[in-house]
Image (cartoon, rainbow, N blue to C red; front, side, top):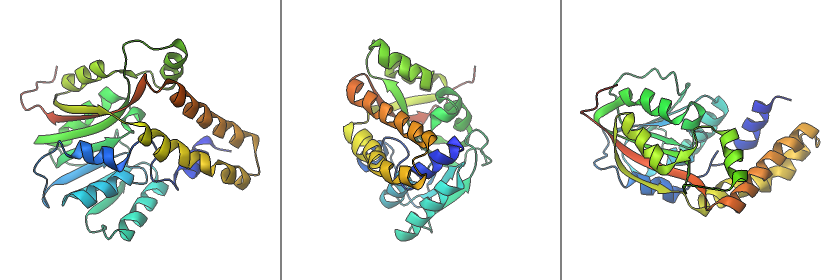
Amino acid sequence: MDLLELILEYHKGNQRQGPGSEEATLKALSYIPCLNEKSRILDIGCGTGGQTITLAKNTAAQITAVDMFPQFLEMLMKNAKENNLTDRIVAEEMLMESLTFKEHSFDVIWSEGAVYNIGFEKGLSLWRKYLKEDGYIAVSEISWLTGTRPEEIEQYWVNLYSEIDTVENKLAVIEKCGYEIVSHFALDDKCWIDNYYQPLIDNSEEFLKKYNYADEVKDFLEQGKIEADMYNRFKDYYSYVFYIAKKNRSFVHQ
């Protein structure tokens, strides 16, 4: 059984494919001024679009949502239709490292829990050209909240994502990529447990049953339980952090 197929099937029915909340999206949005009906937002790695719907409901902007998985985009547009937002949300199947938009065409680039797919620095560098001169970027990224942490959690996350780093170092990367820091904040327990892990755990028995309790499905679900357990034990040391920054007009690419 294909692991990617399992991941898609397991996650497509959920509002979120990673930690987050409506409150966190709105808090990040509050740092970005002057959005109106002429504004354009690009939501990269949108998944099933929990945050996309929130952005559409709380701005008058036109939103382009991109993801590489058509199954996720289908769920997004179903939700958009239910919320009467299809006139302001466009979904496009696209790879985040191969966007085909014109340069300087968006007021805001948004990406919740997705930039790790190509790497934080690479994503911020690649995407900058699509922002207008006064454009903003808002991304959430897994980050260490402390200078040191227990070996067990250090190894666990470094093995999963080698670019995990401290908030201070992430802020330095943002500036290096041509942005001015506006604000940042860590996501809380609700974003992780209530909105991400718990819905997946609640669905696990039904998911197992669907695949006739196959060993590879059991192994797949076990990895998710281990990740949730790690968060419960070590959440003082890491979280997703929302970073909001503005395009630096005077930046000269090194």
